[in-house]
Length: 251
Image (cartoon, rainbow, N blue to C red; front, top):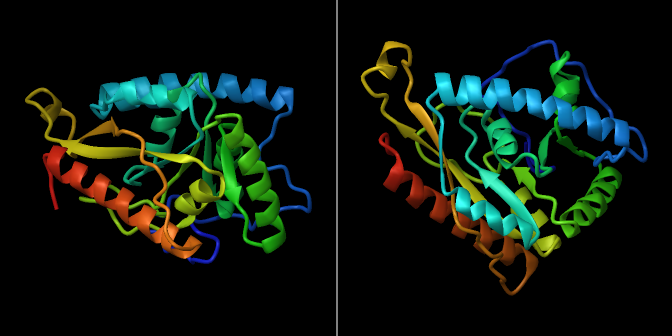
C-alpha cells in the first residue's frame, strides 16, 4: 500500500513467486457485479469467523476499544488509516466494520500472489494504479464510492513491519485521497499489551489491541501541498501520542 510515486521497500516478504500484473485499460477498481458482491459477502463472513474471532480474539488476544467512533461512518465520507504491524491488521479492521462494506487499497503486485491475490481482491482489495491514466480513473471511482459513504482503508506506512513499536513515517496518499474527495479521516491504532499469566503459556509475542480514535478533519493550507503536509503531520502526531499513551510497549 503506497503512494504512486514512491517505491516501497517491504520488510516482510510472505511469498516470493509473485506474478507480474498489468491492469487492463478501463480496469474496474470498485467491482459492483452482483455475483462478485455476493461471493465477497460470503468470503468476509468466513474470514471474520476464522481470522477475527478464532485467530485474532482467541489466539492473539485481540481486543477492540473505541467502537463507538464507528458510528461516524454513517454520516460522512471517510478515509480510514492505521499503523501496519501485522499481516491481518487490515483484515481485522474490515471484519470489525462488517457487514458495512469497506475497501482496502493495496499494492498492485498483491494481485499476483498465488491464490492470495484473488482472495484479497474478492475481499475488497483495491490495487493502487501506477500509470497516470489508471490513476485518473481510480480517483474518479474513489470519489464515487466515498460519496456513497463507503469507507476506504489506506495504510499510510505503506509496508508491513511486524510488531513495530511506534508509528512510522507516513506517505501522502491517504491524505491526498481525503483532501480530493472532501472526506474526513478516521484513525485506527494497534497497540501492544503484555499477555496475562494464562496467555503467556501460548503467546510469545505481545497481545494486539485495536483502538478506534475520533475523526480528524483535513487541515486546509494555502495550497494543496501544504494541506497534505499539515493533515499528514496532524494525523501522525495524534496516532503517535495515542500509541505512546496506551501501549504497554513504547518507543
